Length: 127
Image (cartoon, rainbow, N blue to C red; front, top):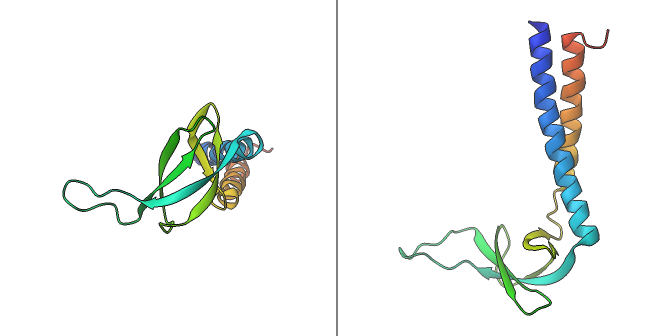
């Protein structure tokens, strides 16, 4: 029973660590190799029923070729601007300045590693 629990904890920890490390790598890639642009924060259009998403806004930014991209976002106030980084190969893949989730990514990786170590200890894999 302890071995099964240890394996389960290690598997869950591995998934969490992988998620945190993958997200951290994406953030670093976009900040290092991505293009930056200022995006306008505009209110999302309302749907046919006259109701729109209450916390949804659109980020509009211009690419060097003049094309305007729109990406949904939330928890931003319409009317302002924010700095975004985008992947030139996939301009829809953006990172909003100040909302890159560095702490969340580090927390996932750390908790994942702790689960892996705890699962190894419970399962008796360290002996």
